[in-house]
Image 1 (cartoon, helix red, strand yellow):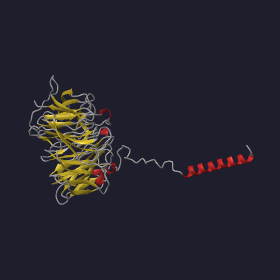
Image 2 (cartoon, rainbow, N blue to C red):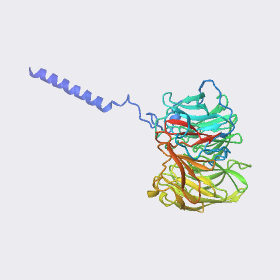
Image 3 (tube, one colour):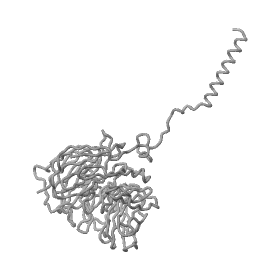
Length: 474
């Protein structure tokens, strides 16, 4: 090869190198990539409901049949009077006998911890159907478990220690639900006809709690009462039309918790007490100040709050939470528009009554509850305390009787309690000592955390994937 040819080839190679170098310096190798945005990669994140079109209440299916005509109701979370105590005169069993519990029916569910509501023979349950990827409201017959109808809408929810967590609110005319991602749906109770819906995350720029929505709605004087967080702390909605009647300003930026709003009569007026992420407050439920904050405290600061406030007749309010939070005792005083809230004490889980998921029951002037897993050697025991000093145990169930995160209810003068693994225990609510009446394994399940519902002697309970109906009548 002569010298001239070599020079030409070298020049071409240099030119090619310069072209490649220029392309490498100026080209964008990621031009065809899409940005990884929180909430857009099948994870729940801020703004996901805005990107995803949710048509609340869009689907309906009816199966025929008719619910039995019964008399009693368990119309919402914690029952008619928000105290988790049945006032029914029906006598219930205190022992299961050699045959065990009388299980009438069971139904498989999506993974979750949602409890049922009962209205005169009809059962209402908001479940998450993983196959259809939908929040699904079921209506069942209480006596035989036959499904009468279902209404649902498509929404993407990913497993996070279960999905569904709430109990519907039911009246003679309406059923009100909140789904895992805070979609509110109102339907006609008898027919299942869709009335209205609300996307809380979208409309109020609210942050969905860590383990999805745990707040249970309620209907008060034909108004849906819902804690939204975001642009408003609490809202009241006309149950018939879906029109917003009032909104409580959220000036401190408190966030929605897993806790539910509790009504409270004190100082001559009615209020709504809410344990939010950021603090505790009482909001006027009557008079010209309706919807305004009557009192508040930011002393209660914990990121995960599941139990609801226990409001006692003398103005004491017991607040508790899990994950190391412990408890706080408040005292409310005053009346009208002049209220004062005082922190009596606050303590860690190992120093007194504290609960992780379930709300304690106030009965016979005492509080009954199951301790958190953080209560050291006392963990998961059922205890009794006096409100004057919730750090001092009147009695405990002892280390041989631990109950985990399961629900408990008081009916016919007896506590019925379900352990995480499906063990069912009957206890006498004595204020001097722990008295266990009977115990049996109801099903081989796990994470049996959903609240109970009972009416006409029929008790509904569930684990993470199955609901069971037990005939508790004598």
